[in-house]
Length: 177
Ligand code: HEC
Image (tube, rainbow, N blue to C red; front, side, top):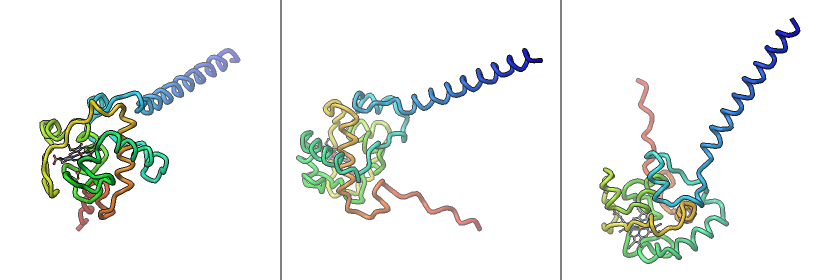
């Protein structure tokens, strides 16, 4: 009797340990990407479409400040203006998005450039006043972390309709009769 209880107890605690192990492994995998160590090109290649999302918020003043410096140091301002308001090239801070305004799409656009993005089936909606190719920066920007910080800065400058900050808002729910 005593023996069986003991065995039962061992089996039960073994199961608990295994379950906890599995849970922590799943968590470790989900959080495993160290953006400072992965290039934008590798991140794009290893992440399924639609799954890239900025770990930073544009309310984090220190990150936005770092992103601003990176934006200038990588020369984005040469085409898009120092505050992202446009110049020779489209504004980054209005509610017109060439391919979509979500994190995933803009990360892929800047990494791959317009030509490669289009080769992957993305269509230019062509509503910006300037139409031209965005060069591929994936091999130039050192880490995905740098690019996420740049986008935190760009988002912080957004001055369009709030509903379109991350691209087209989801359609209203179907009327239920
Ligand atoms: C040589 C000029 C040039 C440089 C440098 C450049 N871009 Fe662009 N960018 C463009 C053009 C042109 C487009 C429009 C692309 C299209 O229509 O296919 C664009 C589009 C974009 C868009 C989408 C804008 C929208 O309204 O949908 C983002 C975001 C962007 N660029 C970010 C960046 C960032 C970040 C950098 C610096 C790492 C950068 N660009 C550097 C020319 C440039």
